[in-house]
Amino acid sequence: MSITGAMSYSNSDGLPEYCAAKDDVATLTVTAPDGYTVGSVVLTLEGAASTPVELDENGGGSFTMPGVPVTLTAGFGKTDYAINTGSVVIPDGYEGNGTLSILVNNEAVTAQTPTAQVGDEVKLVFTAQAHNDHPYAATAVTLTSGGKTLTPDTASRRYDSNNGSYVSSYTFTMPADAVAVAGTYARLYDVSLNVAGDLAGITADGVGLSLLDMNDRVARAAAGETVALEPGTGCHLGMLRVAAVSQGSGSDDIDVTDNCFVMPSDDVSATAWFGAAVTVEYDEQSAAGAEVTPMVYDVISENMIAVQYAPPEYTVIMKPSSGFLIADASSGDVSLEHGDEWAFVMSSAPVTVKVLLAPES
Image (cartoon, rainbow, N blue to C red):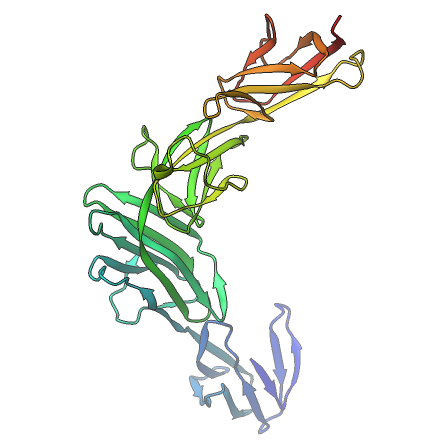
């Protein structure tokens, strides 16, 4: 609130105070913070009843200063902003199979055009029924406000075994502007997981996916979604191979970038391992120009492959450079075995092995 026609200063509480002479006309302007509207301004004379100050549509008003101190009190109300869902597309033939429910602060909203106030928690719940014996779910869900994309606070997709539907939930905090919701419904395909180590979760376009069966480890995603496998705390992705089922489980026909791949219009099998780091240190007496490579057996290629990370309970073989041998090795993390080769069984924690390399005699 600002007042012209009066001298201003701050009191001991840091609040603005003004001085004006009797019969001076003080002009005031009341500005509401984002997400609020100006309600009213009340003028209270010392020792007298309160009277309202009339404000125009811009929050402006005036009053004549009496001969006693006065107090001005401004009231504000929250603004209702629309949640527009007209951009949620129902594919041809899927009418009546997908629904969207909206909750504001955990209360269901039934208005044709839902609204919320700044700071409210809004939850969008998409329910998608199976269609033509295929599972469906809400996909490509986006939120925009004031020309900017909003990132949901949470996003998840789970399978409801009671009715065979998929429920996709998104929560966000209402900004000081209307929010437009867009998305569609799409068929889902199986992602069959064969994972060693600690898999913390799987996402599709950032939406957390639930597994159909914890034993079979099957998730589902729509074509075009970016599927990511998330390692557990302290773990790293050691290997990920993805094959389209129609192409044969042995084919490595889908490109993988880091821990992600783009879902095709087909069921896929994904074989991965997550593990802790394997670090090799060299004794100062080791032969120059030689190194040791940690290796594990890959069930897909049926070959030994070099690794930086290994999953728990996998046997790690220490392979020296050609022409060299490991004369000695030690580790404070695992027990080393020495037959034809130095090896150890990987733990769930990082492992460091110190080696002494020597030329083969």
